[in-house]
Amino acid sequence: MSDPAENKLKLFFGPIGTGTHASLIKVQLSQYLPHMKDYPEIVEKHIHAFLPYFLIAPENNREPALESLLIIAKEIPQVRERIIEKFGDIFYKFYPYWQGSRYFNELMSVLKIPVSDKDKHLRELARSVVTLHQPLIIIMGAGFSYDSMPVTTELQPFLLKLLREVKISSPMEMIRENDRQVWQIAKDNSDLFKKMFSGWCANTKPAPQHKIVAKMLQVGQISHIVSFNWDNLKKELIWVSSGRTFQRLSMRALYQNGRASGSCMGM
Image 1 (cartoon, rainbow, N blue to C red):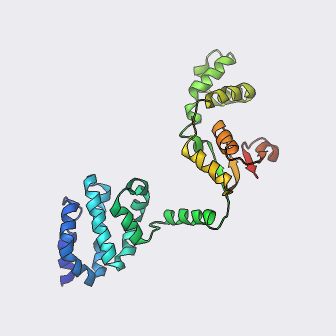
Image 2: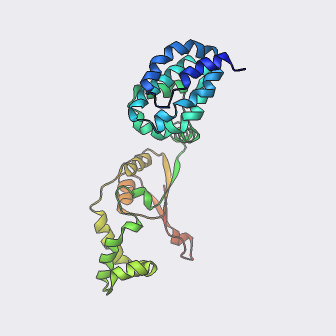
């Protein structure tokens, strides 16, 4: 025999995310809310019905859907954990884009985020650095400067110019067919390579991540930087602009077999 309470609430949850606009759901919410308060376990069971409004429905559904979730979270505290469970990853993913929404911000406050394991990890990390004054060791590779600098696979024009400088007769053919030889030539002509690359770097501008790391260095929130490549943006903005003095260690000094490359800086 079916549960009358669940059947009544199915009248509310049934149309959600199935083509009914979220604004209509929000209008109907008030008449079902008293029944939801009496049967929070049924609301927990069906709250996931709102998911399509954030995943596949037209964007204009998002605000009324957020408002509905906010009302439910406020009025029925027992459902908050289930909202976090079902929607936490979505909220975390879109947090930077939805911060302008009053309903979203208020919902985050009611839910007492973190709303996901990733969010919890980042908040604990931020607390250890800012509140507990435990400095970080930053590990970075070429991708750190991705917004401002070319990565290895985007260096073809630069390598082409380098190969022509050292009189390679068919530079494009070498780039296409023998990548290892190209980089060996760059290594054999390291002074020229560095000079040309420095010229390339001169026209680049720092990205937000460079400025953030420089500031964190300045206030002592970073103790060491381990970098598997080093470009002018890292050196000039992070090293020089931070105003700190570093001991710079090369991997070559640490590993004599030449298999590792990189540098480690520490105060």
